[in-house]
Amino acid sequence: MLTLKHKSLFNWSGGKDSSLCLYHALSDERFDIQYLLTTVNGKYKRVSMHGVSENFLDDQAASIGLPLRKIYLPEFPTMDEYETIISKELEEAKNNGINISIFGDIFLEDLRKYREKQLEKKGFKAMFPLWKRDTMDVAKEFIELGFKAIIVSVDGRYLDKSFAGRMYDKSFIDDLPVSVDPCGENGEFHSFVFDGPIFSKPIQFEKGKTVYKEYKSHNKEEPNKNIGFWYCDLIRS
Image 1 (cartoon, one colour):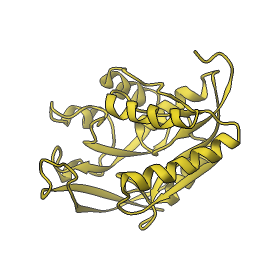
Image 2 (cartoon, one colour; image 1 turned 30 degrees about the vertical axis):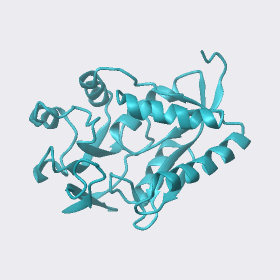
Image 3 (cartoon, helix red, strand yellow; image 1 turned 60 degrees about the horizontal axis):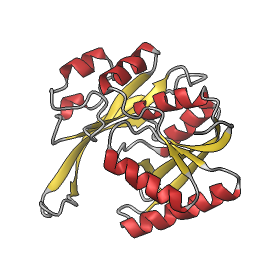
Image 4 (cartoon, rainbow, N blue to C red; image 1 turned 90 degrees about the vertical axis):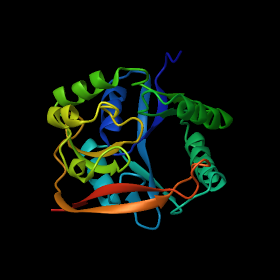
């Protein structure tokens, strides 16, 4: 158990679970958060899976008041490439006295085990402030605290185009199919948070076009099947 304040890095996506997790981590006496860390698609300069321009990450970090470090990844990195890049980042963090890495994951057991295994190799401890909470409770707390978010990406296997670009509110949650997690924890949708208690001022943006993109499946059982996503582009106002 952590009893002293430890230098920590926070894995930041810019989305709702990440924002709520940071809200709790900032008030946790165990963590001395040094900076936000985000992976960015090096080709398009956008947040992986979310499709949000890195400029909005800069705006979020400035409003939160924490430094932001970006890890630029190849468009389609192999696991070896990904782990090599992350390992280098962790080594630098370790040299600066950081030994805690904080995540907003809620219930994906395999992902947690993977993170813990990789971090342990570098002498880090992974922390999950939202772990095993009921995702409907997490969604309600996010909204009740005054956070505001827009849906920027939806997986076409679960949701149609109409869900992209909507505000993440009670109406959105009520309209979700019963098979879709209210926090999108299975990757059904992703969000961009533009206001709330961790921000000194709202992030300004305008909604752009909603576009559809397909990606090759990495599922060994369906190697030739593409996966489609709807993205709502955000534009600086």
